[in-house]
Image (cartoon, rainbow over all chains, first blue to last red; front, top):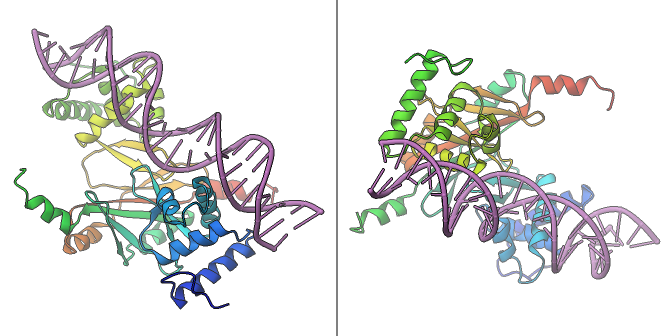
Amino acid sequence: MHSHDHASSSEEENVRLERALEVLRSAGHRITSPRKALLKVLIQEHGPFSAEELHRMLPAGLCDPVTVYRSIGALEETNLVRRCDFGDGTYRYEFNTGEHHHHHIICRQCSSVRNLEVCFADGLERLVRQMGYANVTHTLEIFGTCVACQERRAEPATE
Amino acid sequence: MHSHDHASSSEEENVRLERALEVLRSAGHRITSPRKALLKVLIQEHGPFSAEELHRMLPAGLCDPVTVYRSIGALEETNLVRRCDFGDGTYRYEFNTGEHHHHHIICRQCSSVRNLEVCFADGLERLVRQMGYANVTHTLEIFGTCVACQERRAEPATE
DNA sequence: ATATGTGCAAATTCTTTGCATTAGA
DNA sequence: TCTAATGCAAAGAATTTGCACATAT
């Protein structure tokens, strides 16, 4: 019952994991080691990850990359995971904490991601609902050059 | 000077076309028939189109699909065209009128697109700039079920 | 026991690239 | 003329699918 199999899995993370597993279960999905491991990684680590990144973050050889795609499918279906689209041809995934959703600021140079906890779009969704749309959602990603990359660019005499 | 080669190309559209060609020219790009035809289509028709759709909308056999991709590249570079990302794995492109940018409401069922002329994100970009980011831009797409699709769903007794 | 999940290989989809040829400035 | 643009074919990258085998419930 007590777990110490991972270096840094806090009690809160365990609670989230158990809750997530329960969601999966009650949606008729089976609990398998790839899914459990994926959820652990997604709960512990920050930032949205690509399928390939996720696969690399799993214990070596635990499963095939294809299984990551398929597992993510189950996690998305059950809303445990949100898909992010940074417009570079690769989808990334992050754990859905269920709290009010946030947005990302992506650096064009180094691809670093910062979360922006404010959501400006509540009024927007309301407006669109007034236009007659149902099930309104939105995606909003912000792009820019981060401070570090601006400094990096300012230093060298390459220009 | 007068043109009647297209059924419905208004004077305003011609002005836009000429302006766009000038932008291309002064950026060191050559004016070719595929590029001219692409711009015509993009100026005349509404809604963002995929590369494949654009190719189909061109006069038959005018150019190879690959040329559409490459031409769009030139149009994007010169900011004549904006790329839209509806998160379905296919990029779409629309003519950049240069006026304040708008956003799209995409119907999940029928994929119809409506423009939303309001932009909520000016304050957001300002905030992100205050966080130290430079060259801040954003993408915002709204998804929902359009009125027609809601009615279509309500009628049939399939449920 | 049995349906769901997985691995491996191969297919799909969208987009990009290499290279010889064509054509705009 | 001389470089940029095009066509065709082929490569690439991310993701999905088919099918036999493995496994959670």
